[in-house]
Image 1: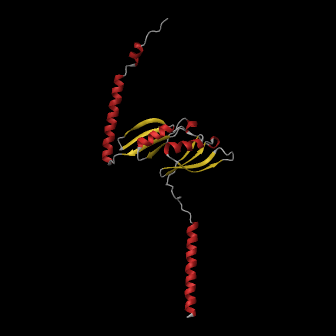
Image 2: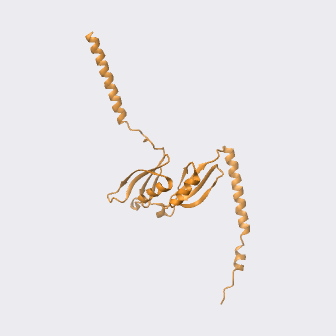
Image 3: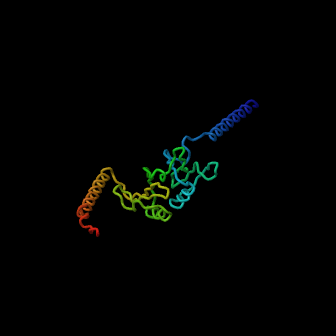
Length: 208
């Protein structure tokens, strides 16, 4: 009887030890993709990142996750914000390291596309916070209602709400109709504009 009790006790201890080791391993296990992160995360460079973070909070409802300063206590070497379910990393300019903002290079070839529930309301809030309208909100042929903004730091943001789900065939047809309409409008505008020669002839003669 004593041997059986001793055997059961040993098994319990072994099971408890295995469970403890499993728990410890789970505690120290590192996820390859951190929780809350997507496969692709944009990292932007801004001139005066501290001010930019405050702008993104007001304009886009961003939540600041963290920030780290250089030894000067002013220059942000790394920061992260969350807009909706997406993280955006950022840092101040470091020209000597080749990291320059859109303001330093005269623009940006990149645009962020943000889906929101109410594009008109979101767009209006961003404009009131200081964003510049590059394209007003309108119904686009691909099924979105969207508009384009430029923030005070030179980055471009397309804000959109999906209004229609289109099949590839419907998308192609809508694109062709839009291109035809745009081409016709461009042609009419060109026809309505006076020729350069006529415009020059219509200009008043300079007086001696």
